[in-house]
Image 1 (tube, rainbow, N blue to C red):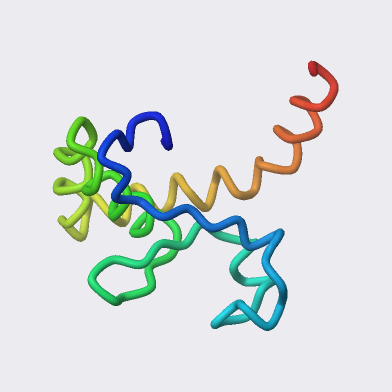
Image 2 (tube, one colour):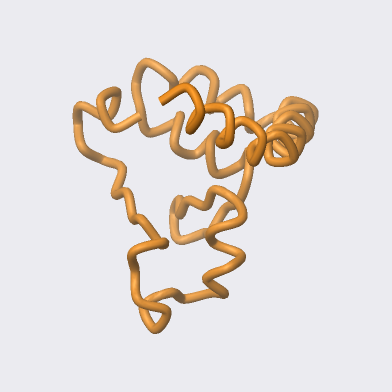
Length: 97
C-alpha cells in the first residue's frame, strides 16, 4: 500500500512498536484489527481499508463504492472471515519463508 501511496498522504503507524502510553485506545484492540483515521474519525476494519483506498487515486473508486452501506457490510464480513484465517495464513507464510 505504501508503494501505491505516491503522494504520501497516508501516515502509517506500527502500533506494535509504539509505547503503550502513545496509544489513544487499547493497544490490544489496535493490534486485533486494522484502523485508520479519516476526517478526524477513527475507523476500524473494512471501513478503515475503504478510507485508505479513498486516499490512493488508483483505488479511490473502490473506496467510494464502500461508502454504500451494503458494499461496506459485505467487505466487513469478508474482513472478519480473513481475521479468522489470519493465524493459519501467518503460520503458512512462516513455513514457506
